[in-house]
Image (cartoon, rainbow, N blue to C red; front, side, top):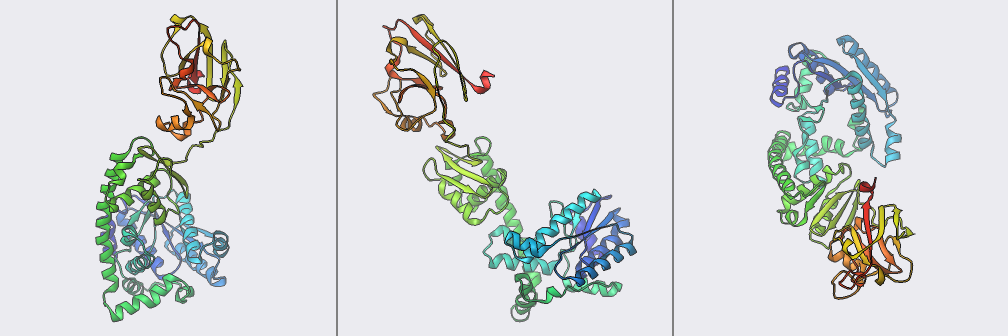
Length: 453
């Protein structure tokens, strides 16, 4: 068995010469076999071996006995041990999880803590083929997609599974041959969890009445499905890259045109790239796929991320607030007016001082209304008569026609009452435009905040 484990390690590149590895050791049969196998292979593979044991706080005195057993085992083999305790029942209640879910989260968090403590390269866990078969069936009955049916990988991040090519029966035979003692967790014999029922009832039934090689067949299926998943994921990543139009922004039409098998994967990758890696479920991916062909301005708030459509784009990330804090200040007709978005510089000039630039307004001073001019953010009911347009319209309609992103519609404007006279970056109002009769120009230049500093 040791040689098969060594071959599996080499085949999948799980360990390199000189690697530092932390083995998760519960004291059960699988983890004892893992520790002993790695300890036996350490000289030939030049490994530096450590161990970690977490007392889950579930089984009372029995768990304490397991901890002492692991401590003695590590002392016997001269393997440094990092141990700890967790109140998994309390964690499960506080997080609304099952004991199995809370225990898994606590265990992997603890193993990473141990890895950092020892300065190790990887964490080795004792999953084997029977665990793989249980995992695949659990994912299947929960409605998982292809990714979930590929099972556990020999290596995922810093976690490796050196025993994944072995059956449980082979591990038990190895323990008997080597005369190795181990602890028995009586909770594994109770039918109070899905994994336990799968192990104790479903797989034995399938093995007896459907296929004597159920476990091997399921593991082979996971491997084949893994190849298909890798191929589809590669194509989805290529399609996502081709559709990218900036940081976390993508061409909506390009994504919507993808086959469903690629579209869903590309969307999930886009969500992950924006930091949404936890609690993203199929329904969330389907919601994103649905708005790709929806109206501009559609918005989803998903776990850890926002998704919104913006004309030809779909954006993923933290959506900027459209309703920025409003302000209104008088416009100084000479000198500067400082506002949250930047600075306006105003001066009166002769007609030859006319310039045409997106952030400079040249207003006919004699056409300006008698009311005080102000710089402010937009208000409901604002009207705008764009330069050379056929007439007045709602400011909101102007923004929509010009495809001004929602997050930029809080820009500072020059207004007189509810009449907008200048939209920086776009144009002045037709009512105050400079023409051949203009005698005096009020020239106002806006410097956005970054340029003004």
